[in-house]
Length: 123
Image (cartoon, rainbow, N blue to C red):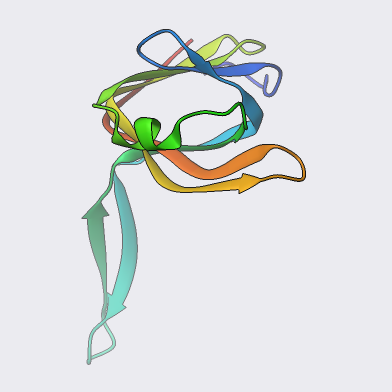
């Protein structure tokens, strides 16, 4: 890992080389499963694992993006770069998903995430 270094400038680069300007930080959800418990009638507890895609949630600056085009774009590789820590996050064969919400008071776009089958973190 990148040690105890966090924060600083972060970028999201699309496969075509263009960047989405992050408004804040991003949140990674890179586990391949989510789990929950179920309780049986005799009091035993079982664990149920559900496969899930690798995911990164972020808020972006509203720069007049064509959100219909972003949401319907073909699968591609996304690169999230942490300049300060020197760590990169690669989502391969991924797509942008979600429900776009544009805050016109501060120019922030929320509700979008990057989801894909393959994830790699590189220092």
